[in-house]
Image (tube, rainbow, N blue to C red; front, side, top):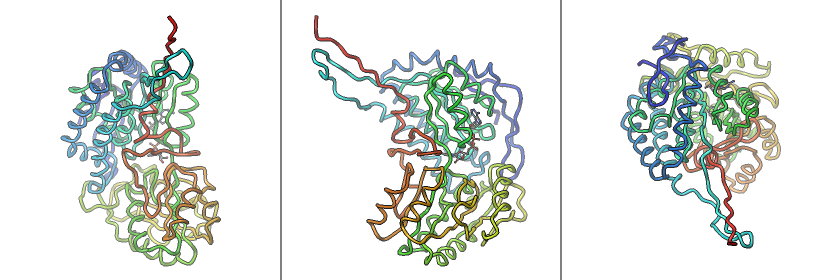
Length: 471
Ligand code: NAD
């Protein structure tokens, strides 16, 4: 596949070619250009140029175009899935549902943008009729990460477009393939300039942030990059929506069914090799149930099928890159003396890609590095606690606040802990239950702003129009 930028409705070649690698094999599959400031400028100008016309269209017109795009994506799902699996190393069988979810995100936002709400027009001020309009922000820059490339691009660009903004999308430099395919599909559906795609890494991202033609930035990625984006965006007061890292505590009380919990959180901990912002990888279990849970988690981890992401049997694929694998190995190598690797920790034999064995680590104490920091790899850690107050305090003694789950048969306790944990999503007796209609996002260092169900508000601004009733 030839990878090019997509500017003003046309594919645009470029220089500075960057190697695109299949993480399952470590082989180069193609090359992508890195956008220079000139290409960025052309993309932003195209988006600005299309902004007034697209923003003036009726919500119904925009919805029709987006529904057509959703259909084109759905018709192309098999091809998109092959590209994503080869490029991002996401195992094909479990990942198929995630990709299909992207179609639902386009359809939902297309419809929801037709029924935005505001206070009823009325005389809130004596002698003056007021109406509240919701207007697009203008040009939105969407910056996506490598761990779920197409879905996390769609969660930004679909609501931005549906509410009348135009978009410049920048995928992660190493996972551009589905973004380029999306552009090819959009070329016949959206007017030129409405959606633009520029390929590149940090310099391209910073050229976008510095560009005066961008009004808002929607970003998913690491905390450090999020801070940098917020700082740069502040210089020109661009609005920012930041979906950053996570370290989701999984709080397990001894009255729960350990086998069932292990089944659920093993799947959600090792999904995408733990490279997921709400991965169920930090387990806090009540002391008396520790041995039973560790036994079940170990059995589940050892049963995972590690292999090429393209194989339908694979349940644990590779990490995204050699560097990411080294990052994860660094956590394991630096572990405190009391921390024990129960299973895994090494590189599986006979595989050329960036694989790491599914790993279970126990004995962690409060404040240990692996209990504190996002590992973003196939490593599930287990800590123990004595009572409810202690576990709520420890779940919160962390800079992140994205997701959390609590497992107990005591309904009131489940609710108390859910109230006590500061996170954008807290699940009781389940984990990672996310739906298109519901808000998703973080507190604290996990960022601000909300995606999925709450995303339409992020890309519009209210305008109060007050009309005097005097002649
Ligand atoms: P990253 O921060 O390195 O990169 C993300 C994107 O930002 C890439 O497109 C990159 O090219 C771009 N970028 C990097 N520096 C930039 C700069 N200075 N200016 C503009 N753009 C810049 O993150 P990553 O390693 O690709 O993604 C993994 C991180 O994303 C993890 O921390 C993970 O938890 C987080 N994540 C969060 C969510 C969420 O919804 N909260 C979802 C998935 C991933």
